[in-house]
Amino acid sequence: MPITELSLRNYRSLRDVRLSLGRLTVVTGPNGSGKSNLYRALWLLAQIAEGGFARALCQEGGLASALWAGPRRSKDPWRMSLGFRTDQLSFQLDCGFPIPGNTLFGYDPQIKEEAVWLGKVRRPSTTLVDRRGGMAKLRDPEGETVEYPAALTENESILSQLREPQRFPELYSLRDEMRQWRFYHAFRTDAEAPVRTPQISVRTPVLSHDGSDLAAALQTILEVGDARTLQEAISRALPGRALEILANDPDPTHRSPRTTELCVALRTEGCLRPLVARELSDGTLKYLCLVAALLSPRPPALIALNEPEASLHPDLLAPLAELIVDAARYSQVWVTTHSTPLTEAIERKSRVSPVVLRLVEGETMVHEVGEPDEDSSEGGSGSHSDGLSATGSVPPPS
Image (cartoon, rainbow, N blue to C red; front, top):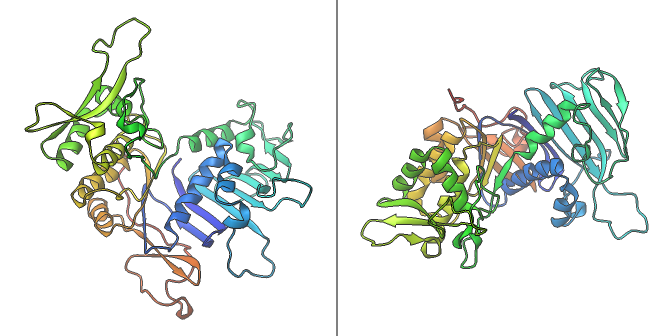
């Protein structure tokens, strides 16, 4: 169920944003325009399904830090709203400050309202979840509205607290879909990074968020994925080099209690031995992580990349753009980037125009490339993002 629209209110610089999404969405703009806020809002939505929403928000400084800090209308409640829509259903969660009391958990958000409904327009007959505070009404497979039988944790979504999958199959399906989203915004490549040392050998169809299981993920692609595309992506970006995964146990069928460890290496023309991960540059290791993420043999529903160009040599941006566009045939792909060359390379390959952000009096505004860049007071592209999105599409896999 690809996301067709994000709906965000009162989160940092996102006072009121509705952003349409396609199979591939590229978000760009100057520093401080709100690109990271959009990415973090998407990340928070994923944490809603995982049961880590309150912790993730508190790590940002709590609701007091995350709430829109600019002027508001007199009747607007002090609430933050996160929502999205797919072709099948819509989801929205509103949170606000907890009731003051004798507690040390004052940074916790409190879920005020939460709803899931079928289609675009919310009606009683299409509503699957209607939560107000600690009480919730759900629709069962027979179409009956029932009260949720358990007490709800006030700072977490009902999606993370569901029981009885046979009773609420649509909600379980939604939660499982959200749990498959993958976010890649920080790959450690320092001298002590796990990616530079041998890692336990276990089949890994989806790269971890931090890339720590890179060797296993690449070996999984070589064995059960698109090995040819993997090697081509490396040779095209790094001419004269070929991937090799080294194992400290030469016999993979060895039946002793020992565990095989794997290490990333590149065989290079002119070298008598492969260069192992601890000898590779930061940019090379990061590129290999991005390759592993985008060529997953089990494509996640959503792949979100935040500033993938960081630490990469400019020559790697065109091969990366090709990988991103190809990945959008199997997963929905979100890219947040500062890089004009990467944005242009993706646009040439996919014909998808980027979403361009700018900051107007502290508020993130969204407009399409090619729109007149007028001041919001003159009725130009400073209006909210209703109807503004990345254009074009990437064909689905045959």
